[in-house]
Image 1 (spheres, rainbow, N blue to C red):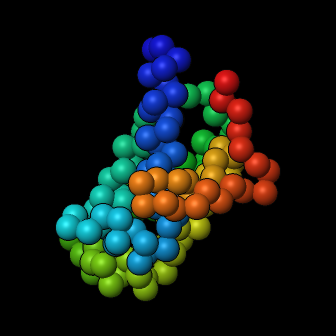
Image 2 (cartoon, rainbow, N blue to C red):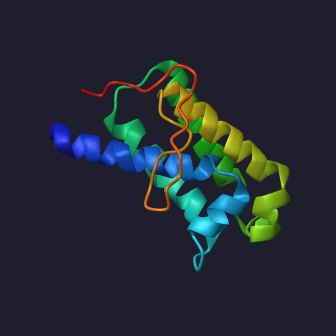
Length: 134
């Protein structure tokens, strides 16, 4: 796999984690018109799978991605239908755990918690600063 493809895919994975780390209200605003809880969980799942299969990780990075993917998987299913609403996204403790794990994972990759986008979101780096992928 070329470096350009890896870099592009890592950028998409970072954005999925940043989306999961956002406060619920911000996620709902950004994904208006979509099934927001599903989109967040699906993006986290797809991102985790790709990174786990294609990137050399530290034990901590791997554990954090696995934990985040496992949590969203455990939240799925007909027995948890109450978790897949925008109200639950805003108030249920499991979604707060998703946000916390996403923030932790971003920090382990030394990625910003938020990144700039077309709406002008400010970049907020973890205390360790930006990572040099070059």
